[in-house]
Length: 128
Image (cartoon, rainbow, N blue to C red; front, side, top):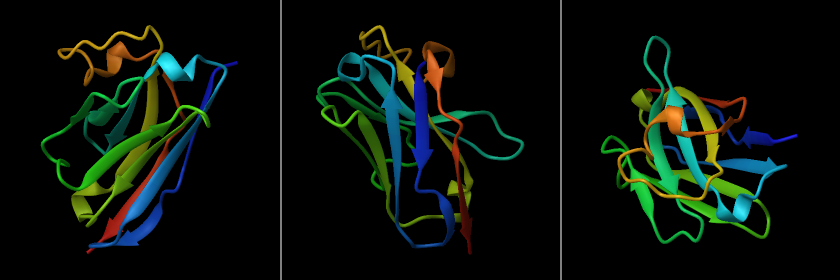
């Protein structure tokens, strides 16, 4: 029923830009906290960006702050992640996740266990 489908990943060169998209269906997207996580081989899943229902609150991991921008369009049930100046260390599978209870907890937004639904992921590979 609930589906989150990521797209936009691929092979890129260091310094390139990418825009990842997540299309959501089957949930109350307009009240959901949406996030992007990434997981590199051999590493734990890392939250890179979070956005609340009306885009008034965002969270970015220190490792991506200044290069990544999360945005959403509630009319289209879409959340995007714009990535600028890609680095090899950005190589990972990027996942879209949704917390559907509509409450922003600053201490929990980066915790993957806080999220109810996950997409299948889109691979981003950055060569140097």
